[in-house]
Length: 196
Ligand SMILES: Cc1cc2nc3c(=O)[nH]c(=O)nc-3n(C[C@H](O)[C@H](O)[C@H](O)COP(=O)(O)OP(=O)(O)OC[C@H]3O[C@@H](n4cnc5c(N)ncnc54)[C@H](O)[C@@H]3O)c2cc1C
Image (cartoon, rainbow, N blue to C red; front, side):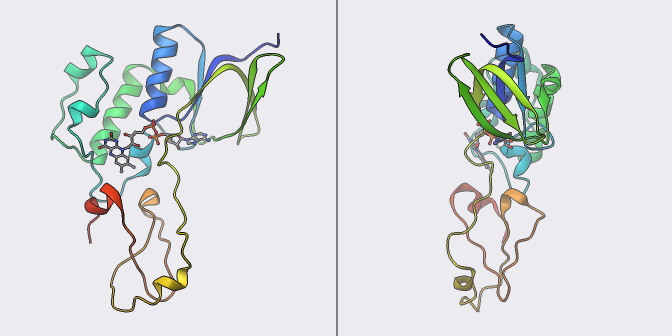
């Protein structure tokens, strides 16, 4: 059987990937390494920093439950805190359980290959490296990548009376301007949070 670098490779340092790393390393004693495309932990709460972003369920219910000490020491300032507070919380969790040291940031997993003969995952990453692991925890989230509009840009240019702006909330600060007029297309919770 081929050797492996880690027992487990975790993809993503959002809520799911952080918990998996803690549980598998700190509680099960496995060797774990994580890859995160972003510069730090937080997942959607790092990516989505648009004005008005906040949790839409009570934070005490959104927070981790695995550690009574963590629940006691972290005090939420609001029932439904805004994005900076959720991100601070996740940073605190990463610090408290020393999770950052097992992540390589600014690095994407680009392919996973199952080597059946060796029963090993071959993990290729955007930094050109290859890592071998017995198990994969895929926690890439479902909302961590911006989706390009499927309609032609010219459709927006027919709305001549609207005075709005267009950009991906996921990449707040990076304007994606439409040439002539600008339009905002909203859906779900984010649409209610965004300021006009
Ligand atoms: C604005 C917003 C508000 C939300 N509010 C709520 C709420 O109130 N209640 C609720 O229950 N849920 C809410 N959600 C849903 C939210 O997605 C989940 O609650 C949860 O944060 C998802 O965590 P996750 O770890 O599964 O994924 P994510 O937080 O998406 O983290 C996945 C991470 O994986 C990384 N990644 C992805 N692919 C790769 C790759 N190939 N290589 C390396 N890294 C990769 C991404 O960069 C990302 O950081 C909200 C989502 C958004 C966007």
